[in-house]
Length: 600
Image (cartoon, rainbow, N blue to C red; front, side):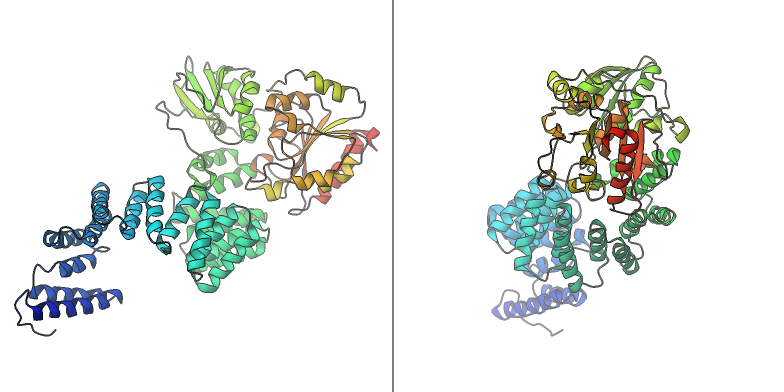
């Protein structure tokens, strides 16, 4: 370091300080913090109150020692109190110490000095995000972008937040804009791929992941994302290889190890899948998805006792989007007497799950409880007629008084359910009388009346496995029977495939709620359905139901059996190979002729 002999404030001293600060910033930007700090400190020996030197020395400590950074930047502000850059970086130092309110106040002060200071808006957004205030963070990021249209950092954060909030189309627009500005941004390509995957645009997602991997071939996160897309595309062996690659690049990458288990489960390699889930839990005992996947596989293989314990983790799995209600009353899981108490049981999953777990309500009443059922509006009328239901309200209604509560999906755990103790008394739902319009429509035809559901919600995460293209139903629809379409939505491609058939009535489009569906189902001779809420409805009504299942089904249908301990009137038709429905339809067609000879 060169000696200095100039008085502080003299032109020569100011020039020397400027040279030192320039050298220090170059070292700083090159990542050589020790030498940068030495250079800033040397400048301060010339002028101990020089604000830029104090500020830059403080900035060098922002990440590692934010408390020291705060002290130095405050000294700079004491000399130059109106400098927005100093104020904003003081805000960063405060944020890095989790002094969030003080940080916001400092960013606001900087913005009062310079309203178009886009970096202050950006760091204000990061602070709001750390405070779990994402909507306000989005507003602040919008202001940063308004003042700097090509601000890559702000665009990425805004897109990421929108994605986390499930606003996928808006997130996609920001990722598109970002990648146009920075086409080599591997993280943006990866995150756009994740959004495309959530929008079920699998091939486009794969293209993004491939492009990202080309930029960063050693990234375990991108390899993991690509594995998810390959799994969605049904390319299971490639997906497994991709997850293996991610875990090899990062041996403690729990997400990749758990995802590997999911693919092994898809491949019916159940012991290996359980081993992956166990490995994930060992690495991170609080990994919710590892526990939930473990639960579904144990339930699928008949280990209900352990499976229902592990299933309680599902409310912590972010991807499931479940929101656990924050009731003041305690959770009941079977440990205390219910005699004379009011229990609120509340729907926490889908329509089919509500119907499935409602079978436990009479058992609660038998223990002396007054049962309030809080369910989806479309099920309220139907559930309200159940034995044991004192009051049924929809999920948006005000809550009456109650003593304890239990999610419907936790009732099997509360009752210690095993394969041998499944409550299978049916019917536990009662159908209303068939409306005259349907009695006239269906009652005059002597042919067998068969309900059909071949697809569910197209946005369901497992739709690619559970739904059937309508064109594959042709052998069944050629039979001498009246077929009643029970699903409320028929995809446009399916309408074209079905055409105009005199023996097919698409009734579901006229249903207002499940009481309408139940009334029609009760009037049918048989329901043939994929795994949707209609399967549960028919089973709960005690009606004959043939269920068409993917190669690896939902847990409640178990493995290697044609019957269901949950629904005695159900008959199960399983895929022999993944996504091969043709053989299933052929077996159903033969069974239909055996059950109803007049259909041949």
